[in-house]
Image 1 (cartoon, rainbow, N blue to C red):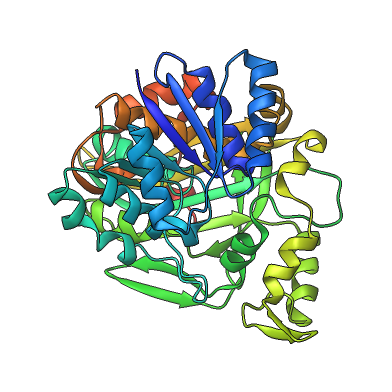
Image 2 (cartoon, helix red, strand yellow):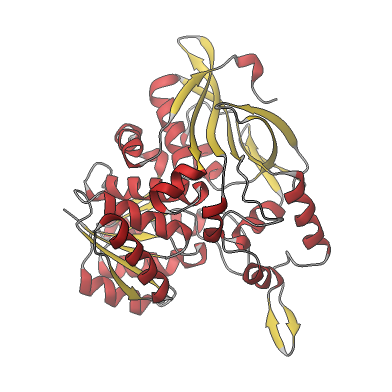
Length: 403
């Protein structure tokens, strides 16, 4: 039915490749591309063994607009699925524009030398994509991604007005190692060490990194978990697109062990992005740290426990104050059985394939650049459980919302 090119062969790229291969009624031709073609070949071999499906592979420099454009013009795919690094979003968007191919990613563009999480760089492409009759779907992971869709669902079905949103994300699993990050270490550490921000009454308010904490009770036996207020990119678009919104925040869970390790690394300068000279060469300390920390994909086989990500939303329906928790729960062992991946990668990869299906089947297809909440949530949430991520809605006492 459709041809897709997947750019990126890390933990998320592996899940995307597996899930596209499973959805053979939607994705009939799959090309997996990465700078390191050996990674693509290993994933393709695994999929051939587990699923009996053949994926093509090729080497590709995602920073090289000309090379990507040539590949797109030769292959003529229906969609480019970008699960490479956030630094590569704009070159890949430029190539899609040049070749007239639809584009999708899971995280907003981030300048390599300026760790800002902002959509302004990609929103600047709106008119160009519309004029070229090409679509760009931004942030089709879980957070951002499914969290945006959960908010759109709540706005469509649960509320007349949404007043507050608290996005909560906890990994209650255990990989047995002293310290490791669950996705790209450089991106993960950038998120945690930057200034915290949230949106309230029309403006952003800043807090020191990891300075605001709450305890949140999660379902499915996960129980009470400590959460810390961070800034996350979906706040930027949701603050614009939710009717009646008064406040939106993002919270993520971290263990004391994780934070203690991170503090030591920060104290000795290893989380810095500023280049230092080592043996006559300039290197970024956090980039070096990434090279010595465990590969997040290597954690999958040893992981146990669950993750939960959701939106705790308050607002008004028919004149009454309401509160709902729209969420998903995943088990690390189950996701490993399905795709040989841990639940963090799985929670991004499955929504990426769900979003891709929305584009190539025409259910979300429209010219221009769009965030997830600007599309109809219903077909997405109907398909996502079939691809591996269930979701649920629980009504809660409004008095118990995070203060």
